[in-house]
Image (cartoon, rainbow, N blue to C red):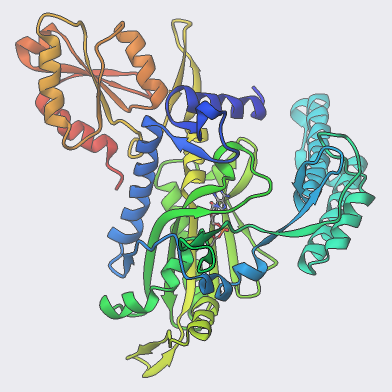
Length: 506
Ligand code: GAP
């Protein structure tokens, strides 16, 4: 199965099993907006909670905030979003389709990379075990030509983007002969800047209405509360403020399912530090955040850092934690050293002194900030793509099993009476009632036990508990493990500890 087919399977599985639905599905959906179904909402809540626990509960110097989505319009002037939160867009005059101009060029580069991969695959077949990939890609003439082209195109694109040279980007598209994927024509408009913020009106009368924005990141809700929280919480630098919540971006290219959405959720933390110590803290947070990902038991090779060479004007270090999605390594989380840009700018625009008096140095200063920012929906997609597994079983049958980390699984345990009679359902419910206050449980009595196991595998339930006639005699039940499919017989009184051990995310 190639990666494209694999990705299609994940998206259809997500819909079939109540994880993710297109928004307003009965009206054929809304582009790049999605709803989370009965299993999706549990998985999403568990990811959020796992993050919150690690960031807030486990750090005595990090506290939370829940700021409003609507903010004073000047916030976005101060943050730079009104003037600079833009993507370059281009329209094809024949298909009337709109594209992100830089993405058209990046897709062109991706096609060359695809050609390199094909050359590698061909050579692998030709040379068999003796094949040395490193040597091949550094010596093969055709591959070297491709690599040179990628470098040249990339260089032209990034130089034009950096210099905000929209005519230069258009020229590049023309020089590369890029055609519209729909119309096949090269009939392009000029490249224009497109601001990604959604604007709306606040106030009921048209004349008095103010234009305000739906927040494009949660971070600014933290910056504007910096002083409130520092003072009322008597916080001492270094300290952090964490927030989870919705953000909105009018993405020009919205594709790859929930990877790039117009309404999405972020989990962000701003860590306020003494100026001069920020790069040390940046390094610590870079490691700590990767460790958070690894703590879920996902193999380390699925992650990599991508350090930014070109930095935003306010940053002095930035890195992405990339995850290997079915469509390649892509950004999952960003860690940024934002200097004193945001607090400094809000001080200027608001006229309020957003400073900290450091009792250890007897100085007042604007703290520097390290930000960790992860998309909850992207993390959800990472978990879906990691978990989705097709297995052929010993008896020749097949199963699809979602191998979610147990701490994140939507349901922790399924309670299954072997048959719907002989007092087994009653006993099963008695056992479930004991477990329900602590764990998400699902009760199922319909269909054969084999079919019920398959349904639980498909939603990733780590443990199934089966109640049979022997349970009525000696209070023992069968516990089946999702991944190994091994079954053990235990006393029902032991269930709490067994489940707790399995699903705790410490
Ligand atoms: N406050 C910094 C900030 O917003 P960002 O790199 O623009 O930085 C942070 O976004 C994270 O938010 C990304 O790493 C990604 O996981 C998520 N994200 C950004 N845009 C998204 C979108 N359109 N759909 C889903 N997730 C998105």
